[in-house]
Structure formats: structure tokens, C-alpha cells
Length: 195
Length: 195
Image 1 (cartoon, helix red, strand yellow):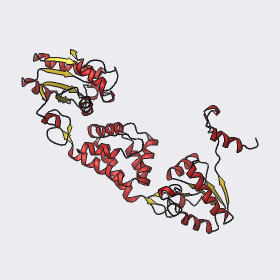
Image 2 (cartoon, chains in turn orange, brown):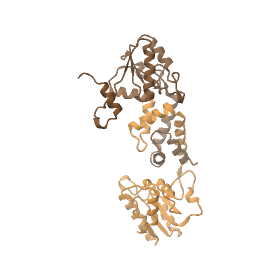
Image 3 (spheres, chains in turn blue, brown):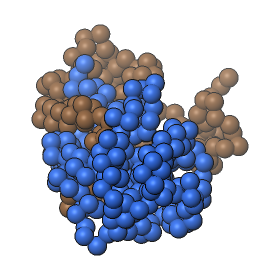
């Protein structure tokens, strides 16, 4: 396999990139934008090397604690549970929430070997035990797995007499948080109800 | 700017990748496919470092001569002029041509400072002078710049009494007449052949 073919093949691991797009990207970089290519290679290498998970909320972060966990003006009594770091980004952009986050980095999926341990629910349990959290906002995706995950976490919270809420279903069913516009996300956040 | 933001920004130089896709790609790589990310970074670095241009036809190649120029079974009397290495790929996949190629790596565009020199037409001139080429097939894109480039090269060939042809433009196979633009239909009509 030539280097060009190898690069085309490598680019196909990107989401939404098929053989034709990968080919187009490869030739674009080599013909017209080698500087851009160098920037991408460098950016990936640096990010992979230095971006880990926030010690407190598990989101992707290049420091030990992410900006949302460090921010002292946030409301510690609210804890929003999301599946992925992109969901944090989307909620932050909707500017409808000023509490803390906990990022599962996935959802319960026993068939794929993803159980409570993999989602860091032991860490979440400790967090709920500290007596500061008064409301757990379940913002997992409105999919079967997301709902199951929300249910599981709500039981953990209920066992500690902590109120749980679920973001309102202004979010279209089967949709994914990261693709919803911020207005809709704002509605979903303010319209949350007891779970 | 954080490393994550830098990577999102860097990925935007890829064709067809906007802010949302770049974000999705970044999080995909960091959350789920760091190995794939490493492969991309490595692939880009290697390709940028080792892929240059074929000494004979100017297409992208990691050896001094590209596979099409090395292949001894090809017909040296046919020379097909295309704008980019992807055009070579497309023609090869159509399996309709077994002659040689010359790749301009662009088209004449005086406003962008792209003249005959930048398209390697001096190299093409030498190639036409060697007396082997009997037909120059103009396969530049059917755009204003592509047509101007084809015209320019046809004059070079005519000055050496070499036959020039232009690939046919018409209704694409599987296309429906009512959806084809009028320019293409005009070409199809004037270019009609005995049936």
C-alpha cells in the first residue's frame, strides 16, 4: 500500500468520512495545504498526548480539573449527568445551566461490556455521598440506553434521598444532544420535571 | 486556546469539514479512537514528507516516477492532460484509457498568479518535442478556466502538428435529460454522432 493509500485508509476512521471524502481530503492536503496537514498531525499528536479526563467530572480535559469543575461561581448543589464531553459543550453554549457536570463517557450497554464501573458510577456515588448535591439532573440521551442509564442513576440518587430530574423532552426522541440547537436545549433544561 | 480547540480549528482546513464536523471528529478521536488518531497523524506526516511529484507527469508520487509513467505496457503515443491527480485516479478506474498522463496540478488562473510556468507547461513542451506523442487528449474540467487551459495547450500541440482531442461532454450515463443543465445539453446536441 502506498503512503497515499495509507493516508486515505487512516482518514476513514473519522466520523462521516467515506472512501471518496477520504480520498478528497488526502489529495487536498498533499496538493494544496501541506501546512494545514502538518497542523492537523501536530494537533492530533498533542491532543492525544495531553488530553486526559477531569479528575472530578471525567470530561476530556488537558488539566487535572476541567474549567467547569474549577469555576467557583457554579452551583455545587446541581449535578447534571451527561453521556459525553460534547454534551457539556452543547449545554454550555445554551447558557441555561450553571451547576456542575458529571460525564459518563458513554451509557450502560451490558452487551458491549459497559457497566457502572466503566461509566465511573463509583466516582459519582462518592460525589452523591458528600451531601452537597441536592439535585441530580439526568441529561443522558433520549435513547433506550440513555433512558436505562438515567433510570439506574436515579435509583442511586433516590437511595440517598436526593431529588432527581430529567431534562424535558423538548429534545426530539432518538436525537442526540450534540445536534440539538441551543434554544431547544434551553427549553429542555428549564422545563425539567421530577423523575 | 486549548489543545482540543486547536485540533478542532486545524481539522477545519479539510474540504467539506465545518465547525460542527470538526468538533465531532475531535471528540470522536479523543473519546473513542486514539489509535485511529495516531494513524492519521502518522499517515499525514509520512505522506507530506515522502510524497512529491512524478518527474515525468507531475502527479503526486512517492517515487521519482509514478506507476503510470513506469508501466511499459502503456501507449506512449497518447498523452492525456488532466488538472489533478484525482482525475488520473478517476480515469484509471474507468479503465477506458491506456496511454500516458500529464498532470497540470491546477489550471491557468492569471489572477491567482497561476500561469504556464506553474502548470509545468515547459515540461509538457519538452514532452511534445520528443516526437513520440501523436495525440494530446484534453481532459481538463469543463469550467471557464479548464477550457482556457485546454485551448492554450491545444495551440502548443498544433504548433508541433500534433493532433489534439477534447473528451466528450454530454448527458452522463444514468442521468435524465430533464435534470441536465442546458450547457451540457447544448454540448450533447452539437457533439452528436452517427448512430
